[in-house]
Image (cartoon, rainbow, N blue to C red; front, side, top):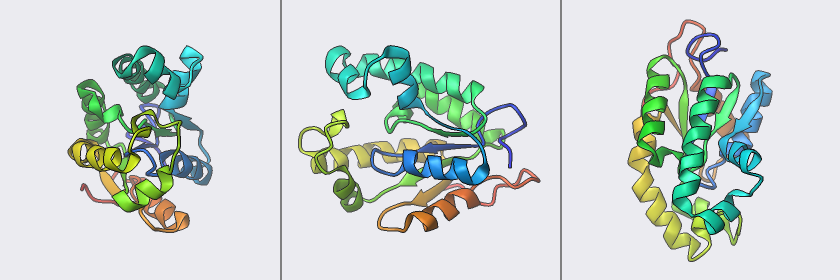
Length: 189
């Protein structure tokens, strides 16, 4: 399977809130498709030498979001495998515009949607998620509600990850990829 056109972007882009499974499912999808996996949070960490959580604390969210926006633009232009974006990447108008354009060219942007109960259970007391450090359940609720319209704006398909087996979720993600004829098998949200 290919992206929108050979050499014009990733095979698949995964978006969604923290704990939705972007990294785990992205790696599994890349393995299933025989392509490379890339995560824009890892790109930011590699370029700065700092963990995302430390960037939030030391430099602030605005600085991190600028780095994230640049990392997404670079990855969309360079990467031809599976790409996972940070949960807040869709907060950027420029990033959303790039994702919508990618989707219009035939690319697959899959929103991994997760319900509050599942997200809270997965997040636990994970200190590597800076926006969830204080009162994770309340922050998750607010984040899920505020970002849902942004994920919907860029998504070419939605896959619910909640309390589902990872194999079932992966099958749905792979089914959302364009066919060789360029027609998506999954529908717009």
